[in-house]
Structure formats: structure tokens, C-alpha cells
Length: 326
Image 1 (cartoon, rainbow, N blue to C red):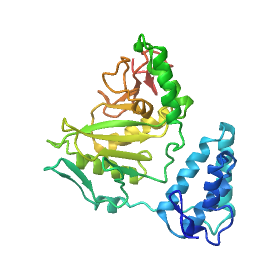
Image 2 (image 1 turned 90 degrees about the vertical axis):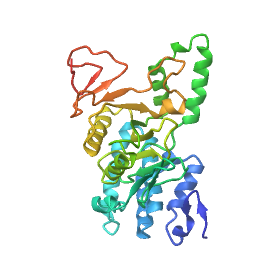
Image 3 (image 1 turned 60 degrees about the horizontal axis):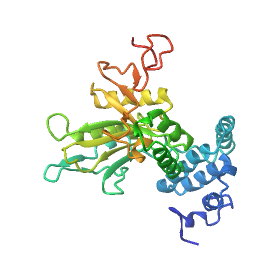
């Protein structure tokens, strides 16, 4: 019975009840994700945590995130109530959080820049370096974005839109792209930073602070840094938020990022949908590729600006969040 189902070992399912991890995966393959209950997923999570297998437990946390994707708003609160009820009725299965390094232990792991190759290395055991291009830090205790978003569907629909406006691509607006992203639930986005290896902008120093803040539950669910410098010598850092529509959370992450790296420069927020669609600076649509700006002449990050909106100098200003700056 030892084998692999996706990335989860079926060995963990020996002697377990039928509603274990393997059953959850089978339901998903059969198209029954929407019929899963929080109790099923929580039971599987408790079962995995009994074996103290953090990798499998992270997979369970992805299930909890994906499960919420299929729920209408009125069901989401019921899901949370079910989770609380499960934990209350199973005292032998406490709500174990996935083990994350303490602040002190995080700081003991070295991140350094190899100047000869312009390559970044991080010795922290919790980071991921899966594709050789990016170094990732993820906090499994913070809800992330859905891994079941319909990127392919969004891309196909965008091709249809481009064909429809082939005579004038500048008719394709940022609002059209964001509506498309919302329809296909491609909702995550990131604050972007750029660092060079010169002066006080050492990418290893900045990344270490951001990585530790992710693990200390101070930022969002995920951050990443380009492992090797771009041709222009810049290292790209992305700090993710799960839903670009959630302006309070996007601003919360920006403020936490300001506190973590002590940098008073303006930062810009880009939805992942634009990245997937290949919409970058200098695009043929004449489109701005970032939707929020925060930190310009505002060291406390008190206000976030919605780039595509105009200030109305009023209480309900669509450009300034949470209050109008005039």
C-alpha cells in the first residue's frame, strides 16, 4: 500500500478511516471537490500531523484553501464554524499549527550573494528552490491563493479579446483584464521590489528580512526572489497577497513590508493575471501594469493609491484608500 497519490504518500493511509487523504484526492479527480466537508479535510490534517509530516500537512492546507474556492459566500462562514466545531469536539486532535522557525532561528540561517556569479543562496531549511530560478518562502499557517484558478481559461479568453480588437489593441483596458481575472479567479498579486548588489541595496539583506517576516506571520502567505540577477543587475522580489480586490489586506502587507525592510521608497502592486497574460511594461495595449502604489512621500504607508482611478477629493474617493489625500 506504499505509493504516491499526487505528492502525498499513501503509506499514511494504512489503517486510517476511508475519509482520509487518498479519498479526498479521489473525490477531486472525480470532480467532487465541492462536496467535500471541512470535517473531512480537518480529519485528514489531524491524521497527517500525528505523523508529524510537515510536507503532507502543507498539502492539506492547500486543500483547505482550494475547498473555500468552491463555496458560495453564505457557505464560507459555515465552513469556519464547522472547523471550530471539529476542533472543539476532538480534543485529542488539537489545532496544531505547522511548525515554523522562531525569529531567532530564522535569523541564524544565512542568505548570501555570490558576487562572482551574481547568484543568491539561502540556507534556511524552510525555503524552496524548485525551479532553479526563484527562491520561495511560504507560510502554511496563512491562507494563500487558490491553486485551482483557471489560468488556462483566462488565457484563452484573452486571445479572443485580442482578436476582437486586433485593429486597435489599445481598446483593451486594465479593467477588462481585471474583470477577466476575477471571472477565472486568478486573484493573487504581489508588491514588487528591485535590488542590486551595490551600496545598501544588497538583495541578500533585504530578502533575509522579508523571508523572516513571512515565517513570523507578519506578511502574506508567500514571497520569492529571483535567484540570479537580471541582465540589468537587478534582483526581483515579489511579496504576495491572495486577492488583489482585498484592499485592506493588500495595504496591511505593504505596511508590514515597510516595517520589515525599513525602506521609504514607493512600491507598486501587480496582479498575477497580467503576468500570466504577458502584459509587461511597454505593452501594445498602452496599459499600466500595476494597479496600486504606496509609499511615495508617505513613509508610514498611510494611504494606497489605485492607479487607474482619479482623485475626487471626497470621502468616497475611488483613488485613495482608506481615505482621500486630496
